[in-house]
Image 1: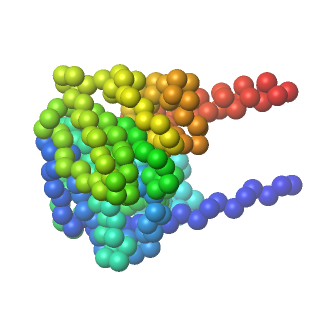
Image 2: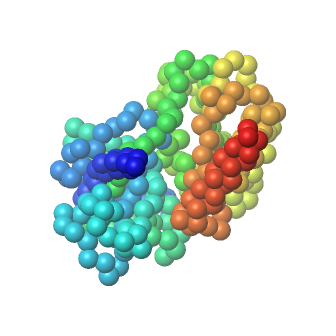
Length: 278
């Protein structure tokens, strides 16, 4: 009988809230630190993401809080809820990191937690993961996203080499949601306001593409990411390996529903590919 492969070890990082800051009326930065983050490793990607772990009410979890042990000992319906967020910055020397949350009232889990967070509160996380960082050898860079991708875009802009051309399109609700961004590159930044003139797909379609090798980052709501994926691959002929594309969320679904939809889509694509090759 074939043995089941061993489950990969899960490292649970436990951060303590050091401070919170409202960057805009709907964007909250929570800075976490403490020895519980001593094992957190900066993976070098500008879209480094973590799975934030929120215990379910009424469930008694083993101490110390360890997701790997929880998965082994408790039924699935008692596993904590996870939400995926980008680390805005991290300092492994001081064991500190910051995460930005988009807040829209009491809806959801993570953002309401951030709005109520106070120094001394704790937050568990898994990771980090990631796959994108701006290639310093690219001729120019294109960064596109909404509020959910703003932390990754801000981090990427800080890593673009001096003088390197970079065009960025960021869609937010209105002018009050804009934040200061830093870039040593030759940055052309366009803010799109959803409440008035925002149409991020049209903006990219109308962009005068520069010649040369472009490295592209398009993350955010799944609808516009899919549209721009088709546009960049089919109409702009950008090589697939020069594209970083990710639908962080889908309008009308929470993360659980969106992840389930992505899993179903991936399963259907695998089955179709298998049937075609049979």
